Image (tube, rainbow, N blue to C red; front, side):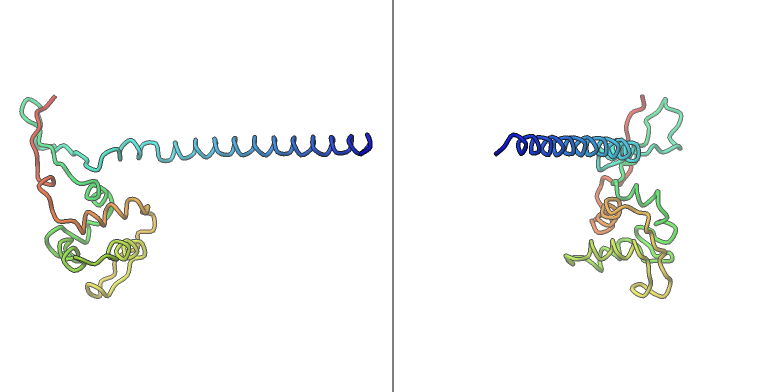
Length: 168
């Protein structure tokens, strides 16, 4: 090869190296921006969700000079209470929709029940339990929906009963 060819190749490879370096910088910056956005959006949820059980204090147990009554509630039930689930359902009796224990009985042993019910809650509909339609819940995340449906399908545990803990 001639020196002119080497010079041209050197310039070409230098341009490729610069382009690759710029591309890597954009990838790193883009990843950092995404991490910051995710941290701001989900930071509180991640710290709240570090356990699958959440405690709620019964306000009737005040003042704190006596034991505080603490309700140990599965995370899925806590999510359901924050949503509008209990407007139409109860754990053990029908309201507008079926009781959650009826849903658990109907789908007991059905390996596809989790995905099926997640979709029903997400898109809503009627017909399975009667003519009254269930509103769609498109804003619920897949993770929260999964936890809620697992709670509905799981048998009740003694952890959902009130527990007593001493006050501070």
